[in-house]
Length: 492
Image 1: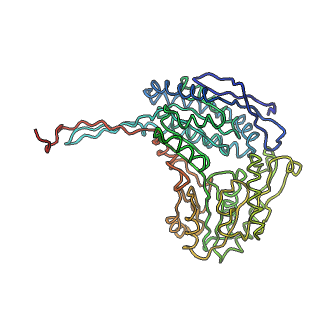
Image 2: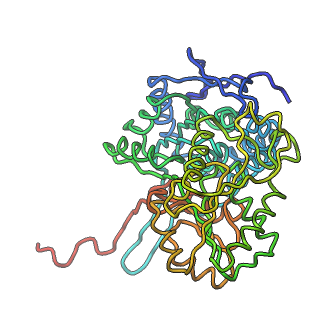
Image 3: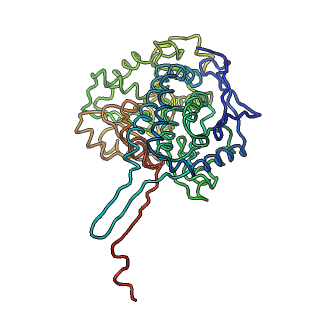
């Protein structure tokens, strides 16, 4: 594994573009080490990328779907062949444990392959003939797509946009997060090389780049994953030209543990712990607050701590025994520390979890030992805000009406989970306001790419994954040929 800094480039109309300015991406494990440099594109270069996508769309929209699939499958194979290199780079720039980075590459490939296998049935026209005439319904590409992706799962949350967009005949300009730009750029380069120039373009940069991507009149759709605050700005910027949108936003996902949950089920408790601390808690769909029925609260907390101390092992992401690496960036470290300190100042008890396997790294890297917060109030910031880091509060509840109200009063509604006897859990789940509710599992462990994923309320607009995710990159076009071409009630 090389530790020399790499240089990535933007891609505009099939060409790698060098820029005057670049920015470094440090290694969260060793912040004094630079993993690589990414370009800072100008607004003018962003316009060039959009223009390239716009011009390419005129031909690509009419390409044969079999050709699109064949090109995407070649890209998939290249990514598969480079899994180790991509995962190492992702782990170094992001901080997630190597097994986690490798898993993200696998998840990305999984949906890319799913999209290849199902795109034909999505774009095949429907023909309806009856006594009234003949109707053809086609599912056409939307146009130029601007994709803006976050740092926490940069590969998965980029390819979930690239694959359906390109396979359904759209073109794209993608902007990754500056906190994890390297591995995703490598993957974009592999994909772009298999497609005609201008079909997939890649830019990096600051706020002016994002503004152009969301306001340019040639952009037909925005696909964004990130914070709700940023999404509000995007919606305002896009309103002048009424763009289509898929927005997967923040969440404050709750786990509800019913009185019939078996606190001695070690496997279930391990799933719960993983759902709180995988990727150091930096996943939009992770369980960020746990409500436990008061009758089992004390026993649950005891068993949860036991399970957490077995699974959580903090240290160097490339240590094969490590399950939790550093947090991605310094700002996120401070955000989590402030939430925990606030809860503690109000009387909550903070319990440190897990083992520190590489103590020599803790003071220099962006490390936080995972923590459990007990005794917080229902409306403390650590409970109602998205921590996006390795801490979780556990709170007791007395009855289902109370916990459903506590869950649903949140402005968010991305995912949730209910733990207990299955039929009982399903009854509670039906009353939960969320895009996805999982039973006796949570977060990535309960994700099924065959089904749509997205949020309600301020957790998003639209759906990704599944066939619905593919269809969201198409426009429905009805071609109607009625037998009776004149309406009987219109006078001569």
